[in-house]
Length: 338
Image 1: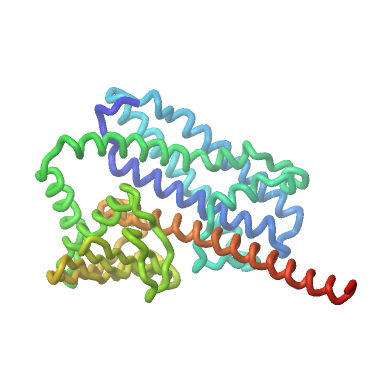
Image 2: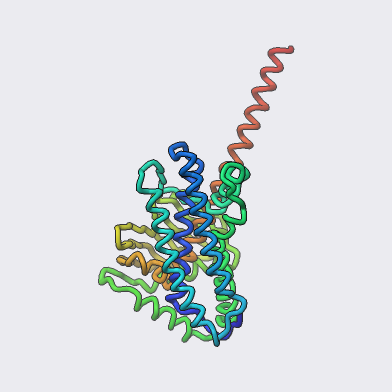
């Protein structure tokens, strides 16, 4: 892939939508395959359907051929993939709706699911032995994640190079795109929200640790702290070098729209500016909105921090349990054999 062109926003949106479709299908599938409410015959049908969907998805991505994209064929490849992605979007939607319709499978959407863990569960020898559901079939489904990651890496490398060469005018252009994407008259000092998110993303990219904290927890050094506020909500806090950024971000979903409610402030020394954003976005326009606001990378940092937090908590619990066993075993041995 050459760096002398840019992908269209519509193409990138179709990628993100399809990636979300696959993630949702995998979440429902792991609940069904490891749950007790679905009959074995239906589990086999489910694996067969996943295999078919993965094969079609993998074929579309293979024919897209990212390394072979040039300025001369990029629009043709985008158009072809968008058409195939639209069909796949419908197929994945029907697949997930069928699983959700019966009501036997309960998916707690307040939990941030660990997609790498789900992928490993679907690749397990258990499913291979029972349903011939092999690792390569799961990899076909994960091919959309790999394509998105490769495009992001290429865009990130290009962007980093351009950022070093372009002046303040380019930054102002991005801010203008952000401002034009907002519609609500309720927004206040919204450009400072955009600049705060841009700063937080830069700090994390430059090495600041994204970590899960309680609302009243102190921050260590230049860490970016995320607090869990419930379903689709989070708090963000940064305090270092005389700069303070605090904000709360909440999403409320309806059938057709996602409503954002964002509030916070940025403060340097004694100068403090409060900001708020109240926006209603169509479900189909959600990826584009989060990308232009910078919320997509901030949310990705939050999800990674939450996954790391889960792992560290689980490891700490295991260590504590082992220590408890050693103490109790020694007390038992002392009493039995003294």
